[in-house]
Image (cartoon, rainbow, N blue to C red; front, side):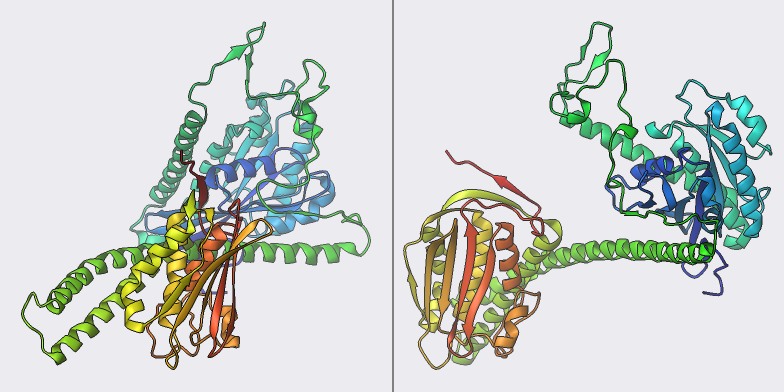
Length: 581
């Protein structure tokens, strides 16, 4: 543990200016702790960028804990991360609550507002105070926020009555909530976050007295509300785009009817007695939509016999595992961010390189054509070498751009009916100078009409045919055969050559970026072409393979379904079918 990192889950890293704090949701069983953390997760991670990990019983109640790592971002120069936990509320899991509470920096105590559950709430509060003391913490000093949940029910205690029982200090704030509707939950979370951030800054003297802890706390609150408001605006926009002309209808009693709700299509809604509301308890929930669910069926009572020692070890092990999960998730987010930055830098560099390369190519071409004066033999050779280098650089730039588009940006494939004979003929025509220079014989067997993306397939076949020309055998005339055959609902395009072939131990890694055969030394190439080919064909729902013998030639097979469909693992972002009249 670093010297600047105190005991417990939350810590301060002065070198990285990182505040990491632990926020625990505490309360009686089925009071709304997990539902509250889920509501926070939906706001902070609307696309499930970070998963909520739940370890549940078969009754869908928390057995050990729920865990949610939250990265707020940078506030006043500090990176702030919150690790949200819940505790099991059932009385028989008292020991587990002690372990989950260890190292807590703040507590949200969720009160079930129902009158019938007052004693359970009071018992849970006493248990909180006891476990805080056992962990070397005090209920008088730790930031504590009350959340009066289930305010939508009928038989509930008033907020004034609840204050008498649970607000044992003027500094304690209380928020009414309906966790199932996400009402009041985020307000509670924001307030608790501000308190724990302020406490961390004050306790550790961050900013060397130059930064007011209250200012950092207020900055964290404003940052959270900005995230909340941006999400709400985005959701409203999506709803408007999805249902721009929604016509509302009402029943005889004036109640709004949702036109998208079809009772005949949902078996869970059939035979529902009139006037009843379907609740979550009526549905069998097998998976947690917010994240991973691990189901445990306890085989013992935690407080009896020798098992508590085993339970202690299990809880400590799970808490350590969750801490590692949080770190792994953080590193994953950082890696994705760095990858995105790398792609953006690559594309900017590629764009900037194109201009001077074009100018150099234009100048060299003008010299080669004699526009700038007659060239001698040595000068002409130098110009040809320069042109060759420029062409190689342009190929590398194009491949880098295409590779980054396929791997990170995504490409929307548009499927047309394509005459493959014309497409291949055009590609071969583009290589006419290389074909004439190397005296390459090309034979094209009449090819069929197929459904494919013209840009993508042109790119793939250009790479395959270009390789066949480039890697010809120096001791015999080059020959290339291009054909296509039909096989079980797909077209198999074959490009065969009699070139240098591919060493057997190199074939499995040929489709990786910047990988080339061991026998290609001295021959220019980017090492990206076959990687691009594979991603494009995968994007069509097809596959690529090669048969080759070193020194004898290679045969590349591109299999494309007659009805292409994007597979889940494809790098392309989507498929757009285009009909041509």
